[in-house]
Image (cartoon, rainbow, N blue to C red; front, top):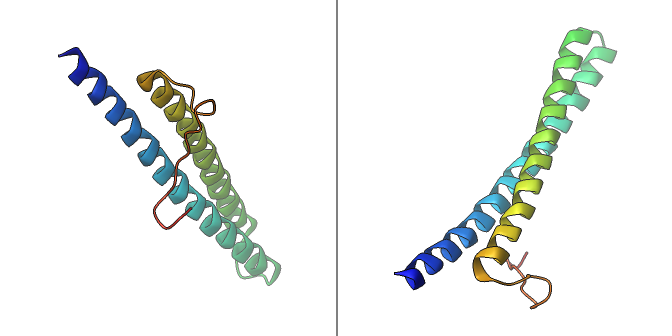
Length: 104
């Protein structure tokens, strides 16, 4: 019973590490796209095709994307702490490393 509970906790923590990494990857893409949109809006503003309001909306979207990326990064770090707690280890001290699919 206890062994099964510990195993489930450890496996859940591993899943959380993977899921939080996926959130980071998705948010990095969102930041990149928001940056591109902001640059495009600035260029259109300089040519007189859009108002400053559209530029500000793009900037706000970029700020939200960056905030979401930061939150995902913090969650990922917390998931590593939770994994270490669930396994009774300290990841850095025992040489634990995480290799993403594709060798990242």
